Length: 400
Image (tube, rainbow, N blue to C red; front, side, top):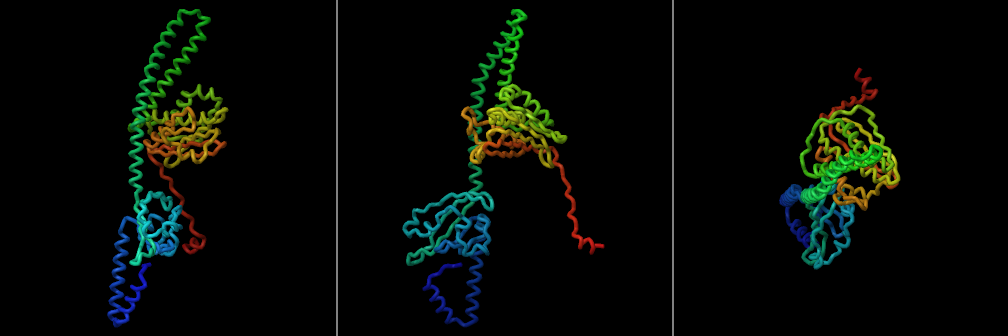
């Protein structure tokens, strides 16, 4: 649809009256060709262009705009723009006076249909000679790739800062840990001089203390290995063995929190190639989260399974659960719902699984627990043959 002045139409009709049929046909053919040329030019542009009439109805949209907003050009004509771009005060914008349009600047908007995009939106008025507003032109520019690049840079900067922080913390903790380890060894030697009756209980305490120091040292070592952006050292592993080692490592904490861990392996599992230490760190972090969610004890069910593409490990607890708004911030670094949490545990898990080419799913409801599932790709993805669709009875009869 093209918006034209009444005087222009009068002059055009006056000129058309003076043309003979042959010249009139030639003029209409020229106008039609020019219209086709303009539409062809608009349709090859990467920017979306939408022309609105004074009421906000769509008078024209090019192919890029149709692709961005998921509209069909044939049916979108005369539809109000708010049907496709909501949460924008279109009536207020279209009612601006001529001098007020200078205050209108470009806006960044996010759309989720037909796919998630970030767009830069520019709105310019269509003003005729007498100064009357006759609609507006909306120009849309896709800036999704720019936004994604900014996010990647920001994540990289955060990860670098986190790595420096982790290295500093590990250094500060490592020194007293080494000192504790040495003094516990000396204490173990001194026990030889004690009577056998009183030695046993003290030996048990020293053994437990040494085990906890070694466990803390291993946590720091694995933390540094996991957080540094290193390529996984993939080796063939049986995932049930890696999980068993993790559960054994956390045995004391599981018992102290009065939690029962149930492991289910309903079918033989394929061997897959992973970085054993990194996956063990991911299992440790998710298990620890589940334990902390079950304040008064509970049941943690860990299920291993496989399909044509992935080997999956599912952690299901019956803890407090999470609201939907908390799920959206689950993997952000430094974000934690716990007062004593670092906000790094699930961030590390996400990076480990992504580096392995895997996927993560989380399902949770308040007071109903959480299910955290990790999918790790198989070494050779199996191909599943589908049965051929059965022919209708009539078709089978005709084939005979």
